[in-house]
Length: 310
Ligand SMILES: NC(=O)NCCC[C@H](N)C(=O)O
Image 1 (tube, rainbow, N blue to C red):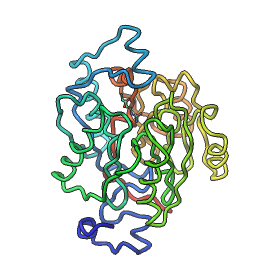
Image 2 (cartoon, rainbow, N blue to C red; image 1 turned 135 degrees about the vertical axis):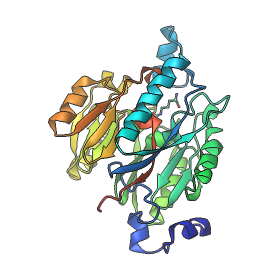
Image 3 (tube, protein in one colour; image 1 turned 90 degrees about the vertical axis):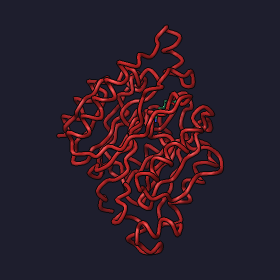
Image 4 (cartoon, rainbow, N blue to C red; image 1 turned 180 degrees about the vertical axis):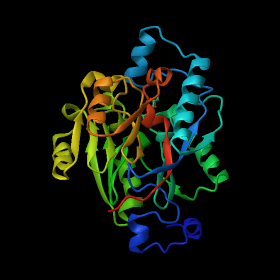
């Protein structure tokens, strides 16, 4: 832990509390603790960049971005978060950064502070400094930065307190980058699992998303069998996602905690299966963003969540 973060957290680096929980910063230790603060970024400069299968298909079909509609959809997401009791911090728009709205990918808030990531997509590298600057201005403690390989936040999953998962496509996230991020966690006693993913699916969070301690959305056919076996051994129930629901970002949901999620509503079958398990599912249509390859999970970077029990 850096001196900067130690000052911010007030926790000694080698205590059990600092290893697995987030008492001082409330930096998330899971994907499903009660969500308190989230980082969004203005979509003012959003455009469809041909950098993933979904956005390439959208362009091939002649689709384009509408800034008015993108602003309205993003505003609806913001309003839904606020109505759910979440505080929203905003990154201001920056010309030349068309994917900035997908805040998930360029940084990761850990229980010990924020880590700047290192996108594999060249056109997204500049987003990291912008997000870190906003974080500093909001007194978010900074833990460090990934400087080797590449890693994007859509490939990162805080599976359970003490267990980090990183999807490795060797395109957006490389083994080197995943290990560099993982070392922040391993040094603090976490287990880190790297799992290979199909580069055509962009990120892990397009086809695997944890929504509570024991429930995850997953397209099992697209995940590595060893990873699926591990999830089953942990007793995590899988809500199956079909391949065509991946492209519509139906799997890419955000947990608000207390068995509530936000989805884009683009995969009603998945939403219905989640509701059948007793969850509340709030839906926000986000077509302007899904055609760029990102959904609710990609558009949100949790800054504070109530710590989940180990
Ligand atoms: N976590 C995500 O899956 N993020 C979506 C990012 C979409 C953006 N157009 C990209 O390809 O980087």
